[in-house]
Image 1 (cartoon, helix red, strand yellow):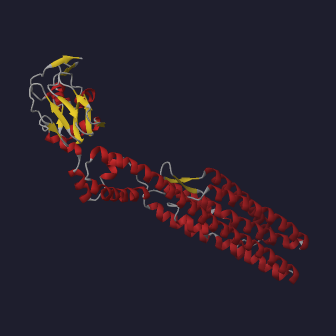
Image 2 (image 1 turned 90 degrees about the horizontal axis):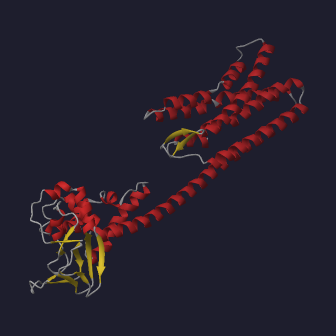
Image 3 (image 1 turned 30 degrees about the vertical axis):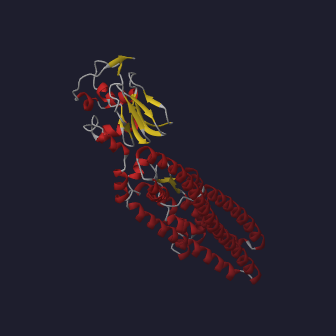
Length: 433
């Protein structure tokens, strides 16, 4: 019954390989025990009863073989689809064929002796020998498509129950004939043997339930550990992504991050993952709006020479840039030297000085310096020349800035040539590098 119940939910549960191996070993043990019991019974009983005993034993062994067919369908995680365990399939078919053949030969002998085909016991024997499991397995894998597979699974459950009826009846009639034919001592001995077989089967079912519970527990623990590990990895990824792309007030960081991690954990528990940006796309609409309003690449729209660029280009510029920190009193760019980078201030203050304009002033958070590189990038005639800086930039305090090197800007221009070439502006002062 355990196997039948688990077959009904085969789309969600895969029978562990170790459990199948244990089942096969137990079956061979039962076969060996049945053979020994048969020999001992024949020693005690007269030859006329040997046929009845043999029939009962063969039917009992077949009852043990049949549950193997319910373990053949498995879940193939590589293709996310139902598949068939080929090794178990061959083993189950071979064992069932041997049992059917021996029982068929015995049935032919009995028919030849009785000369009456339409006896009720013979009809039951014919029904018991029908290879229902083999036929059902073949039909299932040839017809299991889409929603129809659920109906086919229900049909298999029904046939799995129906096939036991004639075999149990055969065992019952054989035991009844033995009881009527022999003395009380032998009947009691046979009853003890059958009770022992039932005890073995019940123990087998209990072990299956216990093994299934243990496997489910281990799977649950492993899944929780994997989810926890992936959650830590995503936590680092999200923290890095937020620091690189979003400027959140210090008092709001913990709240925003906890909301994001709740969504990420739910996604991981549902076996979905993906890139950080994909996860952020499924956040609640209010949180998405909040993050979008604090996206740092949008600050580039405030730069005069970048305000005409598309959102896609601004994102690419931000992606190719890097976050760097400058200590206080560090010269970031010197006057009359090539401008090899442009930077966007995230935190800190940068002092701007120029020999031509003593009142140049300073830049604070969200300030931008080096926009001459944008004009340089639009001039295809001078690919190896960089503009000269007309002023110097020096950090007065510790500064955190988003820096885009000239070489990285060239990569962006290569990707979005149409957006840059349409800009018309005079060439700046240039110097050969």
